[in-house]
Length: 124
Image (cartoon, rainbow, N blue to C red; front, side, top):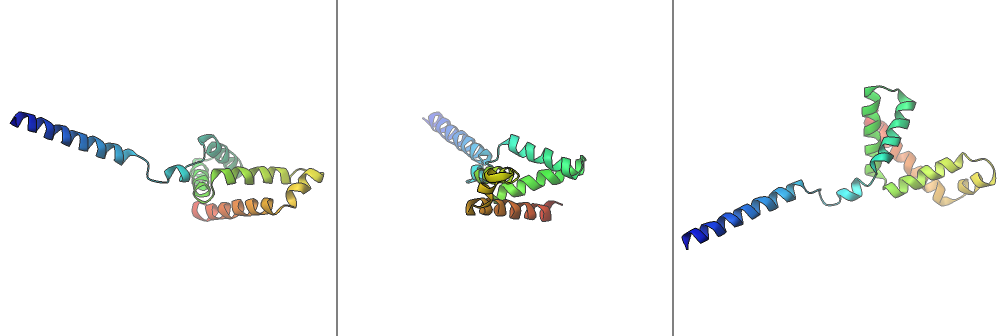
């Protein structure tokens, strides 16, 4: 009976250790919301940033920092909206005017520009 108790005790300790190990490697609550940018979107941003700022290791670090700051401030869906609007703002004529005239367009672009300014301060 004593050996059975020891086995149960060892099993309980092993189970507790495994549970603690798994929980310590689990992402913190809300991490999915914080890190909702796909790797390809982050890479695209970093490549474009490096083209604009130099193609050095220092630029890589600063540009990576920049997208991390932006991702911490704006959800990915909002970032995509802003990038789309900014792209459409460059379209001449009535199609471009449709994007220039809406309150939504102004809001998402302003949000992205504020996030970019914050990233500039923190990273460059």
